[in-house]
Image 1 (cartoon, rainbow, N blue to C red):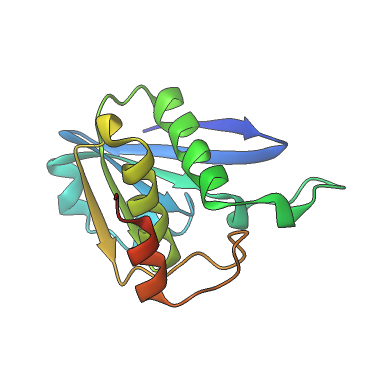
Image 2 (spheres, rainbow, N blue to C red; image 1 turned 90 degrees about the horizontal axis):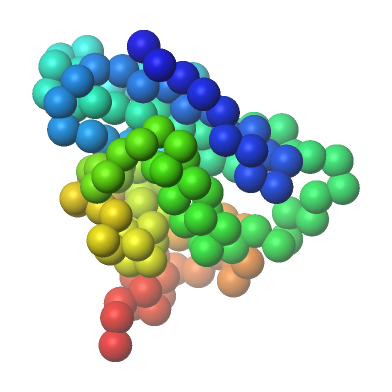
Length: 142
């Protein structure tokens, strides 16, 4: 097992690496999500479970209204670089699934694929909570 931390604007995003095989990043909570993924997946995937900002303490004085989908995508990119993945599968559930989709839209050359389980728009994304249909429609390339 391998682990580390990426500092993004004072948010200490932890990550933990388990398994071997095709690279995969699971977005959300590094301490919670490893329990939900079967051990057998670690025989086929090198999985990095990584925190997103809502799972770690907010630095004193940080204006959380400044957080956008771009912020989350840039956080995922920083973790991807820190763990040394080239083109991982990026996975997330609920709002983390929406963040995985947005990351892939912004960084298409850095993603092998996306697993988005019951994806919904991220709350407090700077544009306010919108319907899943509007979020997905707006995110489509022209």
